[in-house]
Image (tube, rainbow, N blue to C red):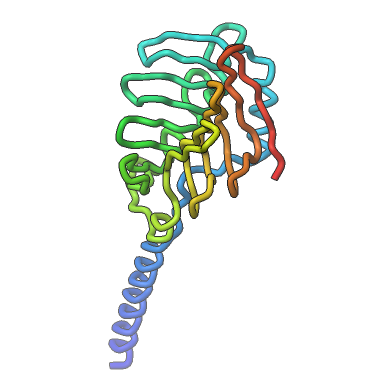
Length: 211
């Protein structure tokens, strides 16, 4: 009899443990997109620092940005496409490594495999894609994270991620003179590496901003 009770108790314990694991799994904090380690980003910038800017047309769309001496898309740049809309960010061997895909209805920020999708009509997060699975954003993520267009009295415009009504995350800052900046923001300020696309000179200046 004692043996049977022990077996039942053990089974109940195992079952309760799985229930606890399931509950915790529902509340695991999922990152919006991969965090780029500072040393990796610095190494990438070192690699592409001397690459000139140019224009390439392909089946995907028209690209303006950095290229290798052999003409391969590599570094900071952007595509204008029919498939994904405007695609800004870091490119490696022709593929987007990290950046912003801004379509007509949805904006995606991150890599091709791990990104957050925002509804451009409301600015709210829709889902997070990771490992070919869609995850619903947590309540706290939906509460303060948005993708917005912010216009300023001097004619400048910001298009990108916002946290608690401040520029925070990845975004594009369009200046009234036609130049624009792609990069990372925190508390309304640029941080880490980014690229200034100069319209008149058709050049790109890689910049670094200390917090």
